[in-house]
Amino acid sequence: MGGQDGMSQESGWTGRQMTRRGVLRYSLLSVAALSVAAACQQASTPAPTSAPAAPTAAPKPTTAPAAAATTAPTAAATTAAAAKPTAGATTAAAGQPTAAAKPAGNFSGPPTVASLNLPKAKLDGKLTVVQAKDYYADHNTYVENEIKQFAQSMGYDLDHSYIEAYAGAGDVVQKLTAAVQAGNPPDLLIHTLGPAQLHFLDIVEDVTDYETEIQKQQGPLPPAWEKQFRLDGKYWCIPHFARSGGFWARTSIFKAAGIDPAKDLTDYGALADAALKVSDGSKNMYGWGMTANRSGDGDNTVRLALFNFGGQVNDETGEIVVLNTEPYRTNNLAALNWLKDIYTNPKWAPMLPPGVGGWTDPSNNEAWLANQIAFTNNAGTLYAQSVGDKNPVADDTVLLEYPKGLGPGARRLQGPPAGPMFFYIMKGAKNKDAAFQIAQYLMTLEGMKKIFQISTGYVYPARQWGYDQPELTEAKYAKDITPVFQKMFNDPAGYQGTSHPAVPNPQSNALDNTNFWTDMFGEILGGKPVEDTLKDWHDRTVQTFQQFGAKGQ
Image (cartoon, rainbow, N blue to C red; front, side, top):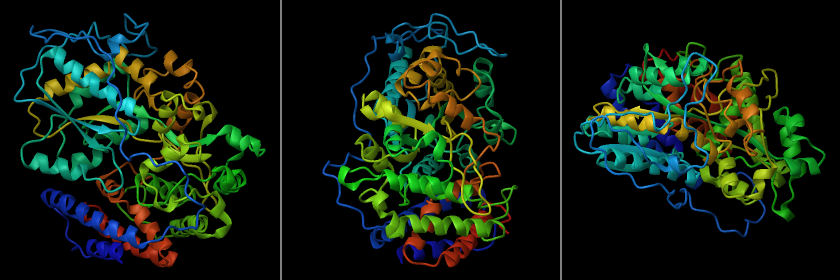
């Protein structure tokens, strides 16, 4: 009841178009309301299946564990006007390049640390950096240490802090809009939030000159991202790196059941049958390591099924909602009914891990690393951590292309499996030049090569440069992941996520930021008829679109 009441308030909005100031107020108020409503909904909705007994291992904390700081040589504070950073965690790496790689293409390649002559910027107060925390602790620590080492070497007074990576009911946009409105924004945000919404809310600066400078070194963005990230003729973000992700399988577990995951898991039907076949509760091994609970991972479970069954939210313009409009209505219903069967039909219960109905974003990572699930969908941090921890599952992991859906609208949509990690310079930032210098330092040749090594199978180049680097083509734990990722990254379908076939936009970002997918599916798991649920959420989505200036219908 709580979830439905919360959404009925949302559907009670007036038909007028919001001003930008009104949207900012909406962002601050509705996110909090939806979070409370979701908490009520989760508390009142039982787990969808009767799963076997919970594993004996204690669960890990939901935030990334602390890691030992990487060793870096001490750097003296820079005082000369044209001083350059000469120290950092990257400089401790063995076999460092002494010159930029010679790429194929009309670009120079990233500069080395030694060649990066950066003048010391004059600061207004402290240089303030807010960094998103990924699940993989070593990755977080590396980026944090590099930022701190650079600031020290330049003599900058640094204020570094984390915003937790998106975890279902996060309030990142709320915090940022409040800071901008108060005239006290951070200088630099490092996060995966999409630029469409942040630009629409007018809380990030134009960084066209900065991004153009990076492209002279690393080449252009891929066409799909050029379309997504160049808004109103300008860039509002600087991609740091592309992030892998998708469907991961344990090769030996499937092959022991006579299944080749790279060849046989071609559609959702084959996937479910195989997941059931490889499950063995007596060995604490479950084939379907994906939740539909309110979380980022849960949203992805529902979203991918609907799109690959031939459904979608809006038309190609991004203006008109088509959830309950044919032919998408039939395809959306097929996907929702199929997913409902997976999580409620006793036939499939043996393949569902204990407690999967209450999983949050870290839960499948924990189960994967604990050797309890044979298949899941996740960002590449899952794989990178197994490599970094020398977990045996790393030697038994394969990245798969997306399975095709089922039914009359069945298709396989894929593209870059996740948005990149971005650098944003916040609206009203007092230290823009110093903020961009951090981005430049993290994207030196040494910096990129080091992060390829630390986050093997997760971090990839965001532009044309880098895919021929040995850290990606020859390293044991990258060489088999890289070609699959490249194929998805360059897939002509160009899957855009919730907004597909349109480019991401503020109204689709708003849906994602409020767990649209799992809130809708949660009503179905709670007993509401699928047809009624789809109709109601179509109507709510129309109103959301209209509030962001889209036609809606």
